[in-house]
View 1 (cartoon, rainbow, N blue to C red):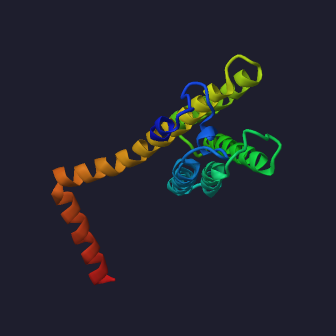
View 2: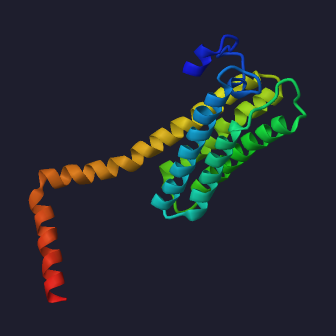
View 3: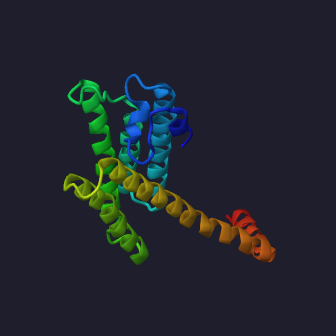
Length: 196
């Protein structure tokens, strides 16, 4: 939002987000580093760690590729020449990100996932692909489709992060409520070490 306000010709509802980092735009370098590069690397780290938490390296790899694809969005597009190498590279990065994300969600619909994770993954895939279909069919503008997809992706990341953190917090709260359990576990470990 900050970069949108700093850009005099940027319309949040009409323009592509890529316009903020496009060739020749004010603050393009900063936007590409912060808005695409850094955020994409954080998404890649989240994706890999999420896969590790789920004991699924394929899932982690798919989501990491999605994050790296997003970070490559830092390659500035050239709105004056859609066929330029920069514009094509920017477009490929977006496709790579969406592909990795959809494959990751498809992997999450597998047998190792809970029912709620499967249902959520199916909804996320649908909500990420339907705006593209709508934009290509002329039902909605492409910038609107991009914003819907980004909202879906970031909402899923935030909710998944909170879901992963909840069991950790419950475990800590239980240990605070029942410190004798933790002391008992420590005593058991000490006795096992002493006898071993």
